[in-house]
Structure formats: structure tokens, C-alpha cells
Length: 504
Ligand SMILES: Cc1cc2nc3c(=O)[nH]c(=O)nc-3n(C[C@H](O)[C@H](O)[C@H](O)COP(=O)(O)OP(=O)(O)OC[C@H]3O[C@@H](n4cnc5c(N)ncnc54)[C@H](O)[C@@H]3O)c2cc1C
Ligand code: FES
Image (tube, rainbow, N blue to C red; front, top):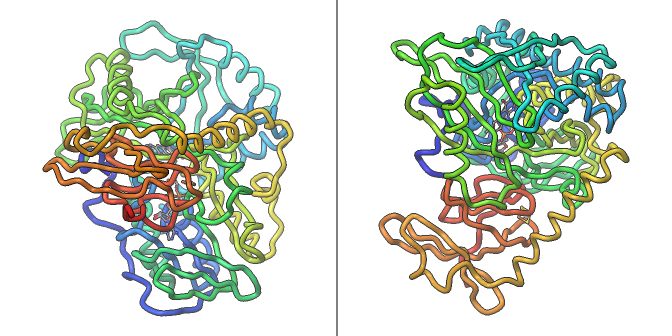
């Protein structure tokens, strides 16, 4: 990833860790992944007295998608409660609202209990119409009324513009995700757990004694395993037909301190735009407006600069006194057909292995729900949430969405039949990359700013799609299931667990 696309949260102080896994070990529960989902789960298991081993592939903990979030703690469904109810029914939609509200409460409670100063602050949220007109807002108004989910029909005005019809939701919040998870990592270690980094897991096998095997050949033996890898490395077609990888964009702009209502606002367009505010630190004369949107299927767009520019223009139109752009970055969200995460037993791994994935843009609350639900499932306690988030759930109401996602996936393999983007490395400008055809195969060729050429196989080591160059992040992105690699081929994001191969 580019140094200049680091997020607002990129930590000066990384979360505490225990270095690389040094030897085979045993524990009660092994958690793969040290993001919001993994560390919340590890913390709540450790609170129950379980000995927990957390493993993460990256050099530091909490440097996955959680480092690239915008950290809105929202309980309103990402794809509207009307849509959720039409796919899963009214009772399930109500249950999801309850679970997400409880997740925001749990984050506040945990931060208080552990004394974590993470800028947690309750804010109202407004849903407003976008260029698509009032229909979505009116439909959602009707659905919320029918479901009995609390909201207010009101108005909301961007500064200097006429008021817009709006739905207001109280009890949302914002926080600083890295401060929170740094605190959780410290708490896990204080409770006897360990957090190992630079440890890539390639295989998990369930059973009475589960085994977790790393690419260094070490093994963790555990009574249960939680795969909280954001986009799991196993699960194959069963999993990947249920979860789609999307890239989403963020810009932050300086705004005069305290000049706007401290709220979350998002519109009804698809994809939607949203804004929330983050106070500047001590001595900073500005707050920042954190603005996101412009989503697309991962690896299926190359106009990153335009997307960041569009978000900036969107902000300036609505907040005319917005100043300089401070950050721009992108990251991935994993969408399910009903907008709810998959949390529960991982059938593809065998007994006593659990998974959390499919954040659907609500990974802060879904990660917290996983942290509450998985210890119940591991301990064999009944849970009202188990069926709602079950990775094995069947959703006849979502057939159209599932078919469209899978047709899109199949279409990506036709890249094997096309020409390269350019004829040779000579045609690639410094700082860029492109696909070059060589005989029957394709090469991922990039050129550094200094002109050094790197030539790799373009074949994604996960399931054989061809990667594509992402000029905004200087990465190779796989359009099939969301694996990403840096210009040198190092794996940045799964499901792949290995790097792009050297070109033969
Ligand atoms: C731009 C953007 C804005 C967002 N805004 C919001 C928001 O406002 N509110 C919200 O609720 N959600 C939001 N999300 C979603 C949310 O940030 C994510 O869903 C959440 O951070 C994911 O947490 P996680 O723990 O599942 O994954 P991650 O934070 O990615 O953690 C997974 C970890 O697993 C590790 N891992 C992966 N594979 C392996 C392996 N094989 N072996 C060992 N370790 C492995 C990775 O290194 C990583 O550290 C946003 C996401 C993005 C990108
Ligand atoms: S991520 Fe599955 S083939 Fe690349």
C-alpha cells in the first residue's frame, strides 16, 4: 500500500504483542486475527478464564481492515431494515437491531471497565435522501414503523443548504478504533493470553483437539479455534458464494473545531456517501470531517484518484468551509446478501472451529457481536443470536443478489482469454503496474518510482484468478475474492495465504 494512503488512525504506537509464535503450543482457544473481531472475542474469552492464543500474519497487531475503518458505531442496518426484513423476516430484523444496539453498549462498557480512553462518544445518526430521491427514505420510514424500531422523522440541513427530510436514530457512537484495540490487546495479555504477530496460519482442522498450522510449520493445539481473519483463508466455494469483496474509499478534510453537529450522516444512494466528525487532538486547531463511499467490487475499477476527488467534491459542496484534505485511503468490506455477518461454526473446518466474516460495512458492531456470541457457542450456552448469524443459513429471499454476485465472480475468470494491458515493461510508467501476456500465461509487472521493474506471476495463489493493478494503493488486487498483494507480491489481505509467485 502507498505510504500516502495511510489512514487517520495509523498508530504511532502499535498494540502490544508477544512477537512471532516461537514454538508449538497448546491453549483453550486459538483466535486467528487481531482486528476488532479477533481481539474482542479473545478478550471476552479471557475474561471467562480461557487461555487464549491470538495469531496474526502482520508484523503488528490491529493492522488489518480495522486500521482502515471510519469507526462509526452504528446500529442502523447498513442496507436498511426494510431490506433486511424482506430477506430474513421482521423478527430477525428486530433481533439485528437489538444486537447491534447491544454491541455499541458493550464497547462503551468494555472501554469503561478497562479504563481505555478511546474517544468513545455517543452521537445521533441521520439518514437523508441522496440524488436518488425520497423513495428509500419513505420505504425505510414505513419499515421502521412496522418493526417498532425507535427513530424520529425530522429534518437535517448541511450548512447553508435547505433542510432535508431525515430519519434520526439516537444511541449511535464514534470512537478511536486503535486506542480501543490497543487497550483490548493489553487486557488479553494481562488476563494470561498471548498475541503473536508475523505468524501466518494456513490450515485449521477441527476435532476434540483442533490443530492450527502456520506457514512456518508450527502448530497450535486448542479445544476450539476462532478464525477472525476478516476474509477467511479456508471455506472455498461454500464461503465465497456467500461473501463478496468490495473496496470502499475515505477522505478526511479539516473543518473548524466544533463547527458542525457531532453526528453521523449517510444518504440513501447505492453506494451511499457518509460523513462523521473526529475531533483533532490536543493542539490541533481543526476537527476532521471523515467522508466515505464510492464502493466497487474489489479489483474491478482503476479510477481510485477520481473516487477520492468525487468524495472531496461531495464534501466541499455540503461543507463550504472545509479546508485541506488530510488523508485519503481505501480498504475492503465483505458484503453478504442480507447485510448480516456470518458468525458461528465453520462447517468447512470441522468440529469446534468457528468463523466471523462478512462484516457488511458494520465490522465494529459485528466484531463485537462475534465477541459475545462465540464464547456462548464454545461453552455450549444457548444464544438467541446463533441462528441469525449462522454461516450455514439459507436465504431464499436473497437469491437474486446471490446469483448476480456469482455471475460476476464467474466473469472474472475470462481475464485468462484477454490480451495484456500493455505489450512490455517499457510501456509502464514509473510508479505503475500492468498485466503483460507471455504465451499462455500472464505476468504482473510493476515499475518503482526509480524505474526498477518487478515481474511476478499474475495468478492469484488462492483460486487462480488473475490479479489487476490498483493505481491508487499501488497493489495487485484479485477481482474474485479480495486477496491483495503489494507491488513486490507480498500478501496484504486474504483469503490467499501466500505471495504472488516469481515469474517463471
Ligand atoms: C474504509 C472502511 C470504512 C469502514 N467503516 C466502518 C464503520 O464506520 N463502521 C463499522 O462498523 N465498520 C466499518 N468498516 C468495516 C470494519 O472496519 C471492518 O469490518 C473491521 O475492521 C474488520 O475487522 P476484523 O477483525 O474482521 O478484520 P481485520 O481488522 O482485517 O483483522 C483480521 C486480521 O486477521 C489477520 N489474518 C488474516 N489472514 C490471516 C492468516 N492466514 N493468518 C494469520 N492472520 C491472518 C490479518 O492480518 C488481520 O490483522 C469499514 C471498513 C473500511 C475498509
Ligand atoms: S482471491 Fe480467490 S482467486 Fe484470488
